Structures are given as structure tokens and as C-alpha cells.
Amino acid sequence: MKNIHIEHLHFHIGEKAILHDITADLPADRFVALLGPNGCGKSTLLKHLYRVHRIQEGQILMDGTPIAEIPLRAAAQEIGVMGQFHSVDFDFTVEEIALMGRAPYKESFEEDTAADRALVHAALERVGMADAAQRSFNELSGGEQQRVMLARCLVQEPQLLILDEPTNHLDIKYQLHILDLVKGLGIGVIAALHDLNLAAMYADLLVVMKAGRIERIGAPRDIITEEMLAHIYSVRANIGYDAAGLPLVDYRTEQTL
Image 1 (cartoon, rainbow, N blue to C red):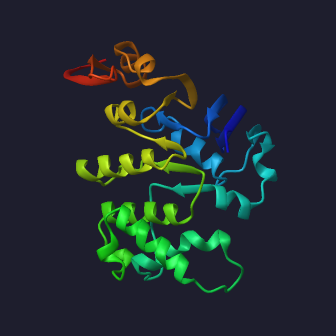
Image 2: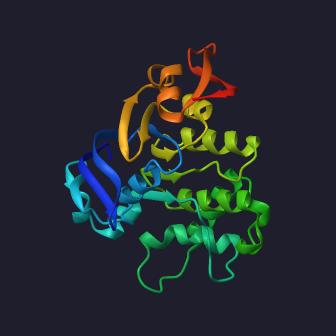
Image 3: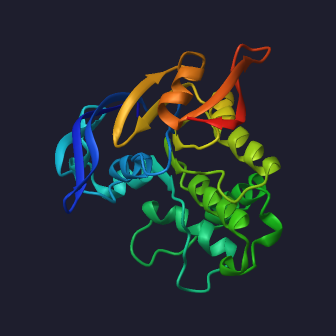
């Protein structure tokens, strides 16, 4: 998958408009970060990409094909999704949760194979959860659950990962570990992020949203500016640059706009 084309996408719940005329071309083979304050529409836009929300108005094309015309099984083999919330009604083990990533490749009631379990073990190892394979998923901390759900995505072997706040609940060690891992996969990533410094470190392209609209799209150095922070987040900050020329945000917490 190379390209996602979004054209005049609108979405509302009842009388409340959530997305307003979203139009963008997003590379599906690079790391794209969605930025913006809470409630700006990031998660809603992502849910359109992985088809939780039906398109009410507008269209989304993946490599030229309308998203609704792509068979769900084929889409699940191409796109891995990790949302914000991981409620599980049954008492599955960590290994069983990760094995669910093989579901798009299975016929009904087809047994898991030794190759499937090897993929699961490797994925759990990569996210630092191999020792927890037989633990109950529901007994894990939020951060541990987040890492297991990423392992499930890895087991799926997708070409595109859609991640909604993938660093939620994670301490800084695992925030960096997870984003290093995701960046190193060599596949497309579209992730909603809150931390602007992490977005600058890992993303190739930033998409900034506010009040249900896309305000700006561009490379981190062009997008993360004092003016953008004032306009989008209503905060003042100083912007520095690291040795690679990437922006570093130093918030002036005593002053908000």
C-alpha cells in the first residue's frame, strides 16, 4: 500500500459535526503522525481508515480503490490496528490475544500452527512481554496491555499500522522502545500522538488537526513552530533544534494563551 487519498470527508454524530471537509493525501508507506488537542478529530479520522465509522459524506481511496470496496479479510491482512482501549470480556492469556493477529489468515475453526506460535513468541519478545505469555491479559497493567496489543499487530504481518495514542500508559523507556520498534519495521504507520517531541523524532510527516479540520501538513521542522503551538494548542513555547535539525519543544508553562 502506497497512498491514502481522503476527499471532502465529513462526519457528524446527531447534530454535532466531528469532521469538517477533510481532504488529504497521506503516504501509506511512511510514518505519519496526527497531532492536535483532545477532541480535534484524530481518533475519528483513524476510525474511518480502519472502518469503525462508515463514511457519511466524502470518500477514502486506498491505492485508488474506495475503502468500502476492499474485502474486510483482505484489509485485515494489510492493516494492523491498535486503538486506545483494550477491554476484553473473556479471560484470555497474553499468548491467546497475540494469536488473534493470525485470524485474517485462517478459515473457520482452523487450528493455530507451530509457525503461528513462533510468530507470536517473536512478537512478544520484541515488545518485552515474552515472559508473560501465559498470564491473563486482564490482569496486566495498561502499559503491558498496550505492548501485547502491539504484538498482536506484529503477528498480523501488516503493511500499514494504524495506532491511536500508542504511547498511552507507557513509561518513557517503553515509549521510546515501542516507537523505535514501529519505526524500524519498514512499513507504513499512521499514529495519533500527543507528545510533539516524540512526533518530531519519529514521524516523516505531521498532520495537525483542530476542531475537526486539518490545519497543516508537512515535515516536523516546518510544522512545529511557536506560531503553530499558539494557534493549535493555545500555549507559548520556545523551539530549539537537535543535532539532526529536528525541533525540540520547550514549553513556557507559566504562560498560556
